[in-house]
Length: 238
Image (cartoon, rainbow, N blue to C red; front, top):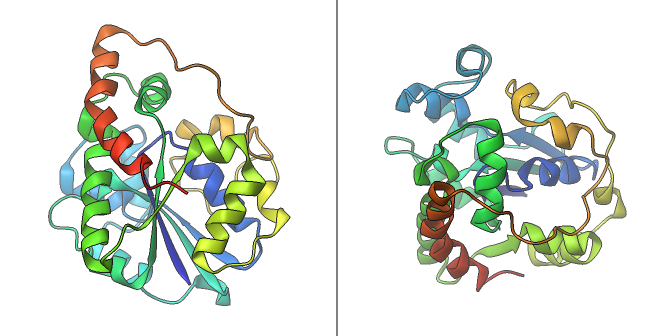
């Protein structure tokens, strides 16, 4: 099985990748289209030059690999995708070969976390618009809503929500998904030193989050603009 997990940044996405890798039967791929996105868009991101050198910039070859067999002879292939990477000119046809799941998080939490790593994010940077479009395209193709899971629900009940997700995917749940070794992973993208500090210190899912963070007026307006897209997908969450 190929599982394409679609989220924006700062959305529990790396922890979810670690969780599926810990199963033992899943190959994982960290943000396959990141280099192609940077190359095609020209946008400046932390460690841009290193990413372009270390990772495949050809979206066609990346898409073919995403639709191909799981590396290493594994039974399943988990792909951690960023919705914002799917810019015009990058073919999305490979998605039809995958089980597409949409991982959501309240935009106030996303904005607060993202701004600590890269100042001045825009609505395009945090991926909610793109996530809604991909959700709609997938729903149109399937004739039903695809799977949606909320990061807050996972943190509140990791075993319960991961069990529900696995059941919906037709996978057996294993408690191995709840723990992983602390530190960097061999399958991390080259950008990990900038973005993955907190998850590298972890060995499992963190506890449930508290109240929503206070935001500056500009960042509050950004979160408010993203909120309708989050709320619409949240209506379909497991």
